[in-house]
Length: 262
Image (tube, rainbow, N blue to C red; front, side):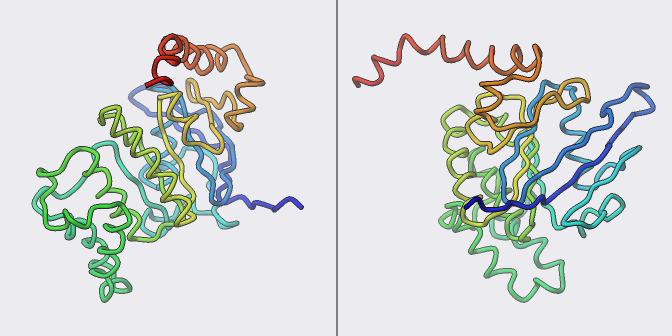
């Protein structure tokens, strides 16, 4: 028997135009996000994906449309009241605070979490594998370790949805591959809905339950990686997504047999 999966978010008719640009960044965008899924928003630079993310978290106000979370309209709700967290590309850590203090900072500000701030912070730091680094400053950590601190800090606030804004773009290849595995493991452990912005086709296909493909402020396709491969919705999807993945596969295929024998 199939298990019914409810929608966590319903984004309806979201548009955004910046006055100085004079053009629409988002053009009447509508889609749903399922509870507990990993959804990637994939598209080239300037397509509107980061603007969409900032509207979802409440850092930008849409010109039109609404955001419904668990059946409640949160379009005008303050970011802190949305039960969402965000992990930025540049980590946004406090450079003058240790790993532990970075993670427990927001917990100590909130009256309801102040008493258990240290315990929760330690648990989240352990969850991302950084217990031995709790007293280090961010400047003493690698890029991958700093990203783990940012994720632990977000998890500590127990958000129902975590948004990621190209969080791995500054990491080396080996660290990115490791972080992919860790992100999926954390999602499975905590059951958190994750929305992940990226311009990397390979990354989106490796991580996602579904992928939302964007171009020039419009949604081109929203589907599973398998269905996108079998049934690309347009020539754009075929060229931007499938052709680019095929190029990567073809460039490495001649070495596959050698690697398999090593």
